[in-house]
Image 1 (tube, one colour):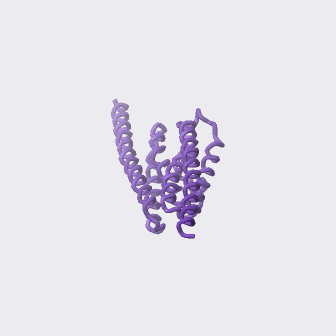
Image 2: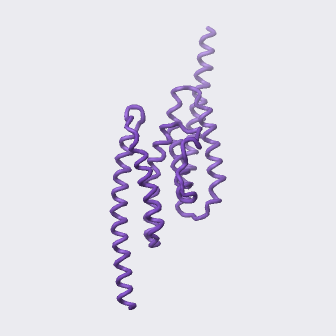
Length: 201
């Protein structure tokens, strides 16, 4: 039957596309994880621009491969990881959060959930700046954490955005813990300055 040959070819092609999507998806997630670690450790914004552009091109290729409706879910994690990496880069080096309009190749849900994950990464920056006693940078990063949390809490469409409520709850916990850490840090910093003034009148 001609239909059998057609269906075999159809499914073989579908399986091949699925394998390509999974391979590229894992590659993008790995690239983003490595990039996030490097962004945390570096103060040189120029070294990341080319890498971000390369990953964005990979995501566009991934999007083009998802020609079967059931493959669309494979885009979620890579897109969210890219938004997380890009937002961390933009906040750290450009003092801004990337807008959705700038990322027309990212699904709406993945933009929202990707930004939710940045809150945890910004906490790491806050803790690092505490080690440096840099109050200004601590407050700058925490301000972005608050801004992202307020943005996230605009949405309550839990039946159409998977993991939204969980990420909101996690973000709230991170924000509250970081606020407590900052209060302790400021108090400790004042105390150290007072002790220094006593020792060196």
